[in-house]
Length: 103
Image (cartoon, rainbow, N blue to C red):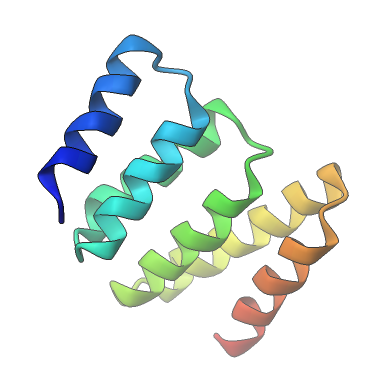
């Protein structure tokens, strides 16, 4: 995982803790590096601050699946479907539903 990317995202979050895009990017960076617990923590923080950031549910569920936490992944996917319904995001809803159907 490129340290510069993580440090840059962390720096952005220090300046603006409510920067949803930076928090999502940090989660993605951790997930790409196989640091799944850190990734899930980022996605959960993002969801707590911005419950309509639907991509966080999908990628959080994916990370939980990779960790072998299928029950937690299912819960995250189900919450993501609710968020998609609130926001009218049919595309992400179909992706989350497909992941849920595979579990």
